[in-house]
Length: 324
Image 1 (spheres, helix red, strand yellow):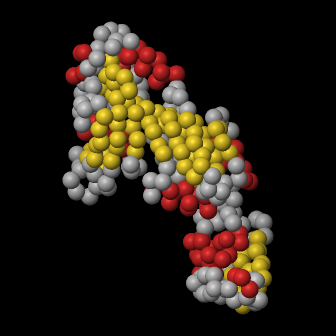
Image 2 (tube, rainbow, N blue to C red):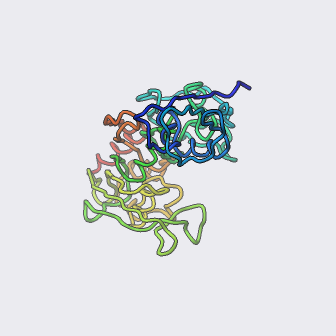
Image 3 (cartoon, one colour):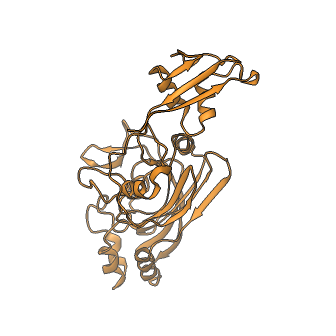
């Protein structure tokens, strides 16, 4: 194992009064204040050679502060060389177009072949460590069978700031989806707390108790008569399965959704063949994260990415909309 790295700085007069953990995090530039605070509390910081565990103390001009950074532990998921459609990458983050069918995190049912495995292999030593482990920071997730734009962090500081932006909804997200039936009105706002379905714990539902606030704005772009519609959705919040849950809640579940379609949709009979069979046989939820815009967590520069839906989505959309 490599020797721990040690940062040593001499505090200048203009540094006076800064909180110690904030000051050291700023000087390091790649890890968050909370991580520096944890290291200080663990005894990894020295002031003029003496250990200090007061993360909130004020920086004193002329004092020498040193912080020992433990070696970054290897990530538990193993690196795997998998193809990635990378839209943008720098030292702080990576933006990609995730294909449908790719699981984001390793789990008991999917221990490998995931996006995290691929990112560890691709990024290598450019992952500077998150929580002391060499791994990518997943800022937001897309379900296995949802395609589209995702951003991942390569440093702890980038993860902290991106996560805060997502929590504050200081970003732009738009999804395209194909749903059963024609929503009425054609533009609207769906608001309903989302939590675990009390009848089936593996899925989410709009609930009256113990849920989290969620709001989705939708707009019908085109429709196949009353049988199906292409919609755009913008999220005000980011909850698990949010669009899928909200659209099912108003009676217009996403085509192909294996979790939120309980029976053959009545709207299917309003579609002519072969579009009806194509929609009924579509093997995944017809959902695509098309647009993601946010401020760069380090530079503050605005970033915006847009990718069209994949071929299977477009083929189904073309077949349905030809019925209009």
